[in-house]
Image: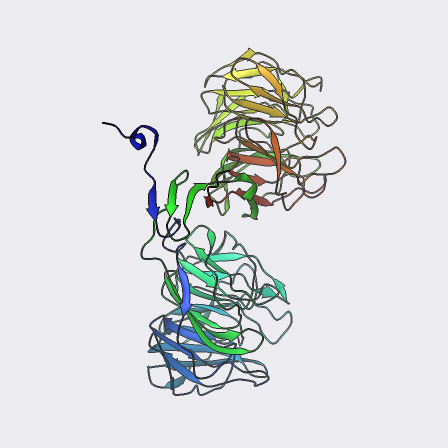
Length: 618
C-alpha cells in the first residue's frame, strides 16, 4: 500500500553543512601557535607543519635578525640572520631556505642560505630591493618586482638563482612592489599577483612559463602587502592592505579567482607560505601593531558538491535550503584587455569562449581583426575576409556566423554575405536578402535569425530572415522597424529590444512565426552591446548603449516577462560586443568607452554565483 509521502513527497538529503563548489571553497582558517617575537614585514619559507620565519621589524625598529621554526603547533627560536633586515623574500623549505634582498635604511642586495641550523652569506642579488615576490627552491629560484631606492621605486626586474648566482632575465609586464608570487612554484611556472606602484594598487596578475610573462585573470580584490601559498595553477592569496588591513582570502585554480573563507584576524605584512592552495600558514604581521599569532588554512576533507537546483536540509542550521543563481546577485569583474581597441563590432560565443569580430578602430577606418578569448586573455586569430562594421552574428566559437554590415567606415559599401567560422577559418556562405547593417539576431550556425537594421538607403527596416546553414529566407517583419537594437536568442525563442531612430525601449519576442510586443526596457537606448551566444531570448542580458548624447552603463536582464535593472558596467559603453550564455553569465567587450570617440579594449565579465538560500514558507 502506498503512503502519502510516496504519492506526494520526494526525498530530501540531510547535510550537516551547506554544499560547496570544492574542497577549497569549504576550507577554513584555524588558530595556530603563537610566535616568540611579534613582528611585521618578515619573510618565511616551508609548509604548514614545518615552517620558518625570519627578519622583520617592530616599529620603529629598522630590522630584526630573529629566526623561528614552526613544527605545526609551536614556534622555536633558532640562529639569527647574519644581516638584520625587513621586507626580504623568503624562498624554499624550513631546512633549506633563502633570505633574499630586503631593507634597513635603504634597499639591500644581501642573500643568505639556511641549512636547517644556521645562515650563510652567499652571492647577492643584482638589484637591491624590498617587497619583491619569489618562487622556487634554495637551489633554483626566481625573485621579481619590488621596491628599489631610486625613483620611480617600483621595479619589473626579475632574476633567476641557479644555486650559486643570480642572473637577470625577462621582466614583468607591469612594474610593482609589495606583490606576491607562488611560494611552491618553479623557475618555469610562477605567478606575480597584485601589488602597488607609488601607493596605487595594481590589479594585474601575470603568469610565467619559463620564457615570458602573460596577463591572466585579475583577482577580485586589489591589495598589497599580502601573503600567498601554492603554485602557479593552485594558489591562495590572503591578508594584505586594500586601503585598510584585510582578512580576505582568494583561491586561484589556474584560470580564475574565487573568494573563500576569511582569516580570523585581518592583517598585512605577515609571512604566508605553503606547498599548495589546500594547506597554508599565515604567520604574524601588522594589525595596527605587530602581532605574533598564527593561522592555519586547511581545505575541507568532507564536503558535498554544490549542485544547481538541489534541495536539502541543513541539520546544523535547522533549515531547508535550495541552490540557486539569483540574477540580482550578479556582479561585473574586469577581464583581459582586447589587443585592438574597437567599436561597432560583434561577438560570437560565451564568457569563456568568445570571438570579437571586426569593427572600427579609429574615426576613419575599419578592421578585419578577429580575437578569441579563453576566459582570461585575448589572442589574435584569422581575420574576417572583409572589414566589417555592425554585422549581425550568432553561434559559438567553433560554429559561429556573421552576416551583413558595412565594409567602409562612412557607409558607402555594404556586405550581404554570410561568413561562417569554425574556430579557425572563415567560409563564405549564402547572402542575406535585404542588404543592411545594424541588423542583429542570434541562433546557431544552422538555425539562425536576423532582424531590423538600416538598408542601403539608411532607413530603418523591420525585415526578419531565417538561416538554415546555407541560405536565408524572408519571414514576418518586426512590428516596429528599427536599427542599432539588441537582438539575441534562437530561431524559435528570440528577442529584439531598444534601438533607433530616436531612443526606443520597445521589446518584441519571436516565437518562430510572429513578433509580439511585450514589456519595454527600463532605459530607452540604442547601440546596445551585440553578439551571439547560446542564450534563448527568454533569458538574456543587455549592457551599455547610448541615448544619443551620453553612453550608458546600465544593465538589464530579461526573465521571459519583464526587464530588471542589475549592477552597472564599470565603464559606460556603446557599440560594444557581447557574448551571452544566459542572464547569469555574459561578457562585454570593446565599444566606445567611455565616450563616443574612445575605442575601448576593456572587457567585463558578468557572473551570478551559485548560492544556498534558505527556503521560507509564508
